Structures are given as structure tokens and as C-alpha cells.
Image (cartoon, rainbow over all chains, first blue to last red; front, side):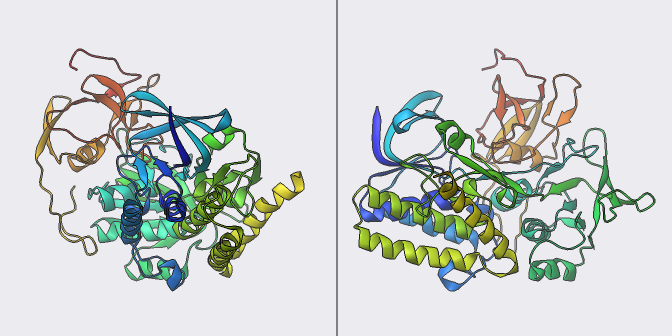
Length: 364
Length: 105
């Protein structure tokens, strides 16, 4: 059986940042990812990141991804691609499939950095080909350079809905409408303004009544909602469209944390059930850490900071960083994390993360 | 439709260097791109039919999680086309229900 000091499941922003910190300290790190390429969802993010300079604001996501890959390579981190982890067993035994064959890996420390997946939304016609996640459309245009359609209705006005709308236009599609069930726009005003200037109509208090078509999307009927979220008859609008993109939130991919036996808290603001962790990102199971969207849906910058935190903490407990140095590093990272969780959009996440951290104390 | 020009990513530099056969029809593709991307580029959106009601399904998540885009690839059913890379000469079929293993492997 293969062994390693530290196994990280998921080679996205959280997992790779974690690997870099731990490997830099001297730990033997193995990263597993089911995809053919590392980077998670960073390579489809062609927009400039926000935050401050230390969060690499102003740098486009795919460039940050490339920098992370270069660092992991330079540090000699082992990255097992095309390796799907399907089990976490007692004594930190990992089971995974690679090239159709079963493998096991035993690690002293495990970091679960599996990310999140997009939510669906139910309406008549929601399963028709052409209805897809906004992130799916983003992957198709920015990674694979293929347009999913020419006329798109975007559902959801959070930052994902706003940014992907703009990127669909950059790729050559026409965004015929952006609709939002809530009475006001969910994401940053700067992104909403950008797509309004580009001529995309935004309809608040509006949802999909029906998507038309037999074999594929041919049109969309929207309807307005009253203050009780009930559809208002007579407010229907019809759009000619071949694609519907859903930007209605994400859910943490927590299966492995459940299987391992981690304790969870239910925090809707973080995407539902999330594994409880302490300020070292360690779960209720000693030696098992979490980082990134799996422990609460935020964004890539916070995921990278959480990854670093887990990397430092795990390397410390393996004896590669002394307590004082580790304390300094963790303090710096927490400072940056707290800065990312400020402002009208960050405060809610900050409060939710505080609740998650407190859950552990309440249980103890 | 393929994106040839792009304000951030620049012009497409890859060229179609593979042919795959989808339900008997030959379509051009780029070696290594996901099968689903090649299909979308060729205007194909329906990838399979559901087992009970024969309803069409296509790409939903595009990152290998939802399994809505599974097809029969070289005789193997339930292959996630959004994360399976194209190889020249692949034989792909729209999957009906749970699909069947075939001798075409």
C-alpha cells in the first residue's frame, strides 16, 4: 500500500494552496484529483479577481491557477490526476480508482478540498437539453472554447450569474435576459452595471414559468413574483432562447466528510450541511482537515486562504513548523481571511463561518 | 459553435485533428477536448434519453458530477462525455435508458 504524510483530495484552489504551504515546510504531500488536469474551477475564471493586492486582486483567475501549478511543480508535490477518491476509511485510509483500477493510500493527515457543485432549479422544461448550470456554460466557453448557445436567459443575479453573463457576451453569445427571483440584484453593483451597459435587460422579482421545446430549449416564458414569491398572472414575458443558464447557488461536495464520520452543522448561508472545523481547519476527526467550498461556499480567494491555513496547521502537527512560526503564519492568513469576509457581501459569510467555528465549541 | 476570436483568451490556435462518429455521422473534433465540447460545437445537444419516459437530456454541470451527459462511447455505456477526452476514431452513440454494452469495443 502506498503511504504519504499528507494527502489532499482535490487539486482546486484550496487543495493546491494547501499543498504549496505544506510542501514548502517540508512535508511529503500527495494531491489526488479525479480530473485530467489540476486547477479545479480556476481555469474557467477569466475575470480579474477582487479583494486587495495580497489576494492578487486584478489578476485573472486562470493566471492565478497557472502560478499555483508552477509552485506545486517547483516544490515537487506529487499530483495524482484521473484519480477518483471514493472512500475514506478508518485510520485515514483513502481508496481511489485510477485507470480503472482500485488503489489505496494511507496518510497521516488528510485534507478534504473537494469543492462544490451547482444547484438545479425545478420548473416545467428544466431537464431539456440547453438548460445548464452557469458554471457549465462558463467551462464550455472559457476552457473548451465552444458556445453552448446563441441566445441565453440567465437565471440568478449573484456574482456568478452576472460574471458569466458578461463572459457569454465576450464569447459571442447574446444574453437576452437576466432574471432574479428576489426584488433586487444579488451580486456586486459593478458587475451588474457592466452588463446593463452592454444592454442586457435585468428583471427582478421574476422567475421562469416554463421553458419551451420538445428536444431542446426553444424559448422561455418568465413570470413576475409578488412579495410572497407567488407568480402573478398576466405578467408573463416570452423570450426566444436556445439556452438557459442557472446561477442559483452551489452545494458543498461533502460526501467524503460524511463517510469519514465528521460532525456537521446546518448553515444555509454556507450552502447547507457543512463539516464543522476549528481555526486550524481540522474537523471533529483528528488529522482530517477541510478547506475551500466543501466547508462553506464562498469564492476562490477564501478557498486559497483556507487551504493555506490547513497546510500550515497540518505541517505543524507533523512537526515541520514550530509552534511559534506556525502561530505567526496562521495569524497572517486569518487576517487576510477576515479581510475577505468584510463589507455588505462578506459580513454574512463571516457570521456564518463564526457560527460554524462555534458549533465545535458548543459540542465540546 | 466554436469561439474563434476572444477578447481575453485571444484567437483559437488549435485545429480539428480528429474525426469522431456520432450515431453514424462523422464530426470534426480536437484531440483531447471533452467529447461533450465536440458535440456542442457540432450543434448536438441531446446526448441521451431517460429510461422510463425517453426524455432528452444533455449537458448540465460539465464537470463530471451530474452524469446527465452520459453516452455510449466505443461500446461502453454511461461514459461521462464532459470529462472524457476525444480520441480520433471514437464511436459515440446516443444512450437510450441505461445503455447496453456492445461488441464495437
